[in-house]
Amino acid sequence: MIRNAKAIVTCDGDDHVYRNADLLVQGPRILKIGLGLTDEYDELIDATDRFIYPGLINTHHHFFQTFIRNLKTIDFPNMTVPQWLDKIYRIFQRVDDEVIFYSSLTAMADLIKHGCTCAFDHQYCYTTATGKRPVDRQMEAARMLGIRYHAGRGTNTLPRSEGSTMPDNMLETTDEYLKDCERVIGLYHDAAPYSMSQIVLAPCQPINSYPDTFIETVKFAREKHVRMHTHLGEGENEIMLERFGKRTLDWCADIGFIGADVWYAHGWELTAEEYRVISKAGSGVSHCPSPALLGGFPILPIHQMAEAGVCVSLGCDGSATNDGSSLLDSMRTAWLMQAWHSKQRGGCISPYDMLKIATVNGAKTLGRPDLGSLEAGKGADLFMVDAGTLELTGTLHDPCNLLARAGVTGNVALTMINGKVVYRDGQLTGIDERELARKGEAVCNRVLRQPCDAFHNLY
Image 1 (cartoon, rainbow, N blue to C red):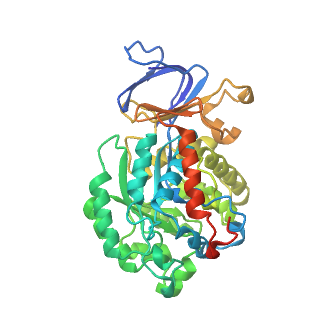
Image 2 (tube, helix red, strand yellow):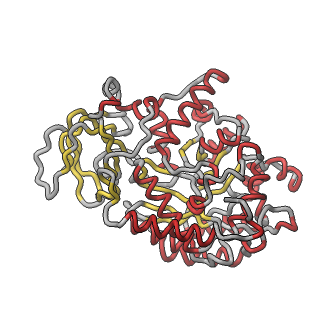
Image 3 (cartoon, one colour):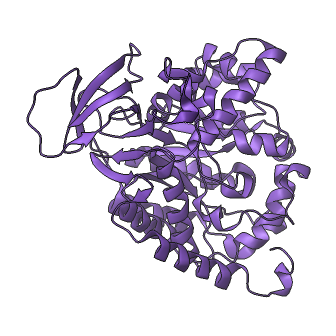
């Protein structure tokens, strides 16, 4: 029993907000929300002075990049995406499966501490050092922390000699990629309600793979009933026009990489007509505000996209273009971007709309009707904010708009996932955080910061 919450912001279809209310959880699901619940319970959580929100849902990230951040030598704001990729991949190729494990732990911990309960990660970093272990190591990290994890099994198949930005030791063949997709689906994909792990087929981007990689992905994903994802509309259209005579979305549509089981990351190059194409197909777009700002790229007109019927969700994106893994920070940044954008184009969304983008739309994007809002029968994924602190005085009349508008971006008071408290009062439960941090830093030093001519002065 969660007792006496100052407010429970449900994000349900009617936008209910309960005041001074209780919430009852049994196992992985919410049983009841209401005033003065009298049901029996085994454990009590006092939510006095707490605002409760649905768990945030991250729809685009690259966890392995968490150990490749805060680098003054790779100045993303002064590069195009292909230029940045060409330079950063020279570091990525050194990643091994220990980096995958500890960098994933780091990103997941950051997400949890900032209210995220379900995360998708686009894992395309397969090197000679990682082998085929990245998804396995990430699932190990997710189980340790208790986060819901959707793993994007990515790949890159096109060599640099044929126009990609990929080093040769980060390439796979389409056949070996699909073989490993079958393996990880068999091990980790659970489509049942309240599932803690799922697999998404996610070739990295069309400019870095052979066409057959995407064509075969479509066939295999639909045979296995799993979702698909890729980068799209992030600066690659000129290259796609040169290679195929088509913009990327047209190319994807022609091979079937579009539909209600597909979503794309970024999309700042998309046109108004392409919004209509995406909407008609039922596909979604994961908006990642931090890299857009850092790179000086166009701001997504979310109001216009929503009017066209596009489901827009929220992603942190990789730490190499964000340097953090807080969806609360991404919410704040995204809303401020929209406020600025409305002065240029007209039509701004509210801070509460941004919360629903990060919850309701995130659940829809990942195909999770069991998540995204606080309602009886939904998964017990939530976070709490301490509304009794001095710095929030004067804001408490409107808990719906509070987070993005007032800049509530620090660590939350509590995070619950699948009915279990995984973070409370500054502590991740069930792990020795400082010991893991020490080991992770040692791995980062050993693998990525050791002297090497090819990487001299990168750190």
